[in-house]
Amino acid sequence: MTNKDRTTASAGEKDREQWMARFQVRLAMQPGVDRAVVLQAVKEVTTHCADTGEHPRTAFGDPDAYAVQAAARLVPADRAARERRRGAAVDRLGSVLKRGREVTGL
Image 1: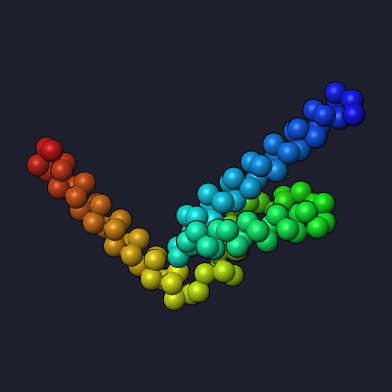
Image 2 (image 1 turned 30 degrees about the vertical axis):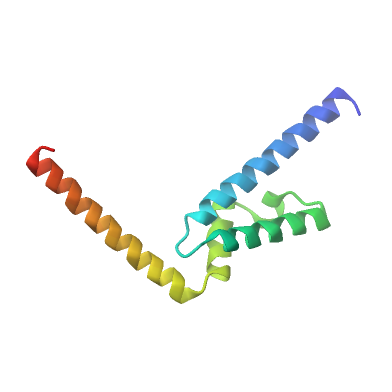
């Protein structure tokens, strides 16, 4: 293997790792996603890519968009809705607390 081939292989591997890292982070941020869902989705992607030799971007597209799709497919709708409601309540509480600190000067 020439130095150019090694460099190209390294760049491809680095791109694959970056895609997977971004996918995992974006997936974990989706409502209702827990560790088991992330592990299942990562396993599906790595298995597909190992079987076909495809790069994840070629097979699944943008990691952010695929994370949303995977979450919609793997997380039960009721759990995702419950987490969205909980997140909205926490956001509202955070806003109230922030305004309270601004008013009181704390």
